[in-house]
Image (cartoon, rainbow, N blue to C red; front, side):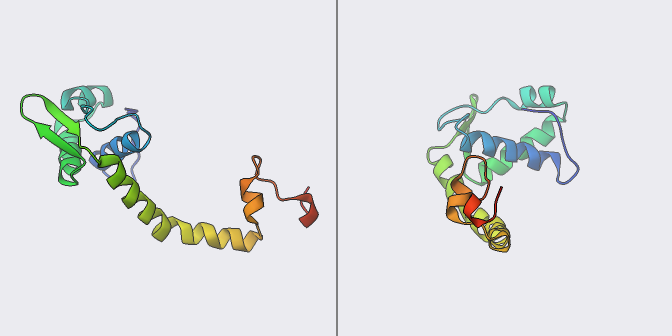
Length: 126
């Protein structure tokens, strides 16, 4: 995990979000173990209790489970659960602003599908 932190949210939350991104990106699959608390703490240069708090949050969200003496593992269905939640969050929080920008700029679905994102020349684009 990248040890760069920002001041916008607590570090434990950033660790949690990075694990979520790794699950969504397929870097961590169902049944995979999470890196140990000590490993993450050492590599990220944070207190082990900070990592533990992030892992406990993931456990509370039922994304991971603790297996006594073995560590924490990604739960079956975690990615699907995350996808549903992240899609809903995107549609309710980010999409309205994106949609408004698309409308304001007069972009068409075809414009959005172009690899370089340039509007068609027939509508006054370059």
